[in-house]
Image (tube, rainbow, N blue to C red; front, top):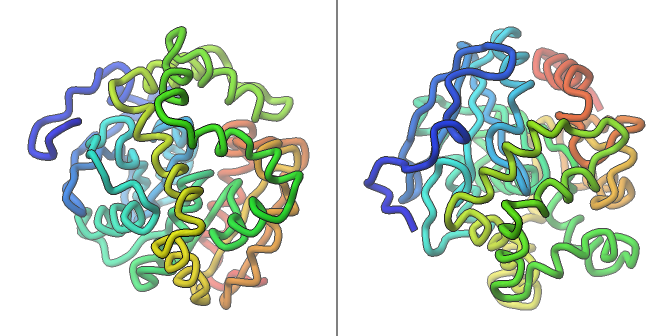
Length: 317
């Protein structure tokens, strides 16, 4: 595990490239929040848009949106979640409530009064959570490929097809084996998962190699599966029941919900009912022909939808 006070020792070539693939120069920084240090990649000036990656990725998943958002007049910041990429690997703190406090703490550390949160997969789960827990810090919410936490819990427990689609999460409950599988053969499973979960627009080998190399950074595999262990094991525990009750609080943040019609791990039916928890303008957008990674499978369409919504002064239902 990494001491929060020590400089990051991650390989520069993987976690801290000097520029994005399109040549856009990046600013890399470490910011302190919630008792740990978090790596961010930043470009542009304007209202803050904070991008939250999912599994099995890191901040680089947002490489296309960083440039698009900066060109549209936003301060685009992609952070590595706790235990991933260039952020600290701490021995504990991987429950969603604490991970959400990481996110809101980063917003404060960046000197901003609030942010538009954009989350994918696990990052989306945490974005929902942060918007409920700290609504004053989240001016807008965009979530991709992840239902509201209460909807996720209900679907995983009561929908047989969703339980089967999310079988990898049940597999994460075993000790040590998931970590070994994720790091075997130089992270080959990472590439397999991303390929299997994507639609017809498959990622290129260079992108897959980047994610494989990032997963091979010591302790990353363990830290990547720990949130899922909490999400399942806490279902019948007092802390999990309390969290589920807390998430019942109505969300009063304008919300954009994005989903790929071919997503094999998060069914459209599971995600689509999340609007019942939003008492604010809620917009649902289904991308036909895309899988679990719409922001990478069709970055132009995804970025256009996101930016148009962010710039809409009155997002309607």
